[in-house]
Each structure stands twice: as structure tokens, then as C-alpha cells.
Amino acid sequence: MKIAIFLFTAILLLASCQEKVKEPRAPMTDPNMVIFQKNVETTKAFLEAFSNNDSLNFGQYVTDDFIWSPPSVGSDSLPRATWEEAMKGFMKAYNNKELTDAQYFAGLGEDQKPNGDVRVYGLWKSVNAETGKDSRLKYYAVYFFNDEGKITHQAEWYDTADLTKEF
Image 1 (cartoon, rainbow, N blue to C red):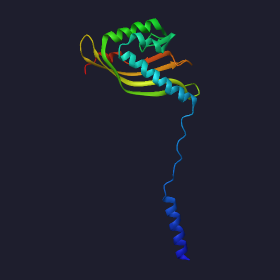
Image 2: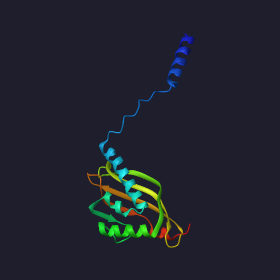
Image 3: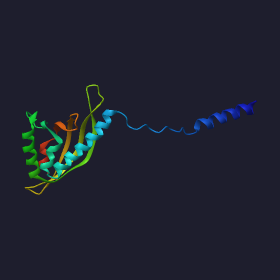
Image 4: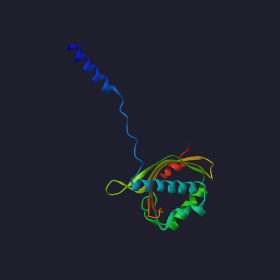
């Protein structure tokens, strides 16, 4: 009887140690995550056009009634024309612009579920065109999209003082 109990216990122990086979994950079916992935690609193309000083194609990713919320205090909900002038100024003032360590996360709606918008974190590296000095800028932005996949609003947060630090 003791041998039977021992064998039964040993079999139970061996059976419990076997690795469970996991079911393969289902493909992403959340429609908002599919939209988010598409909008990430648009965001990347938008930022790449900026990096390349491509002011002609840069604006194709935003709507005509695009709103820009820059990080400066007291400047919010600026129109597209103001944004275009500011971006042309950045393009002229800094060379070799590159967004490094970029991370893209889903924007969340009021229900705390993905809504298709894109949050971006990264580090802009560039060279000051006038001084030739390297610059770094810790960057965070949220890009809001319409149903056609165009950017309707860009809200940015960064410390412009970072651009004057020496590296």
C-alpha cells in the first residue's frame, strides 16, 4: 500500500512539473489599436519630414484647421500658419535633426482605452546651425488624429533651455 501511495504521489509531482503549452496569441483585433498603428506610421513620416527639412511635404500630414500647442507658457491652440513659421524657424536653426530613442504609445480616451491618438517620447539630437554645437532636447508630444488619419492637434512638452546646453 505504501508503494502505491508513493507511486501515485510521484506521478502527480511529475505531471505537475510538465510545461504547459500556451495557446498562440490571437492577432490584434481591437479596431482602435489598428488605427493607432496606422497613426504611428503617419507620425513617424511627419517627424521624418521635419528631420529632413521637408517643409513642402511636412504639412501634408496635418489638417487645414490644425492646432499647435507648444510648450511655452501662455501659447496654446495656435493656428497652422503660426506652427508652419515656427517649424521653418527650427528647420533653419538646427541641422542633422534626429529623434532618437523614440517610443510610441496609444493615446487614451476618457474611458482610458486606446482611441487612435499617438503619444511620443524621445530625444531630439541636432546641431545648432549658427554655433555648430550639438544640442539635445527631451521631447514628449501627443498627436490627435481625425477619422481620415490626419493630425488635427499637436501638443508638445519640452524645455527649450535644453537647446542651449553644451554637450
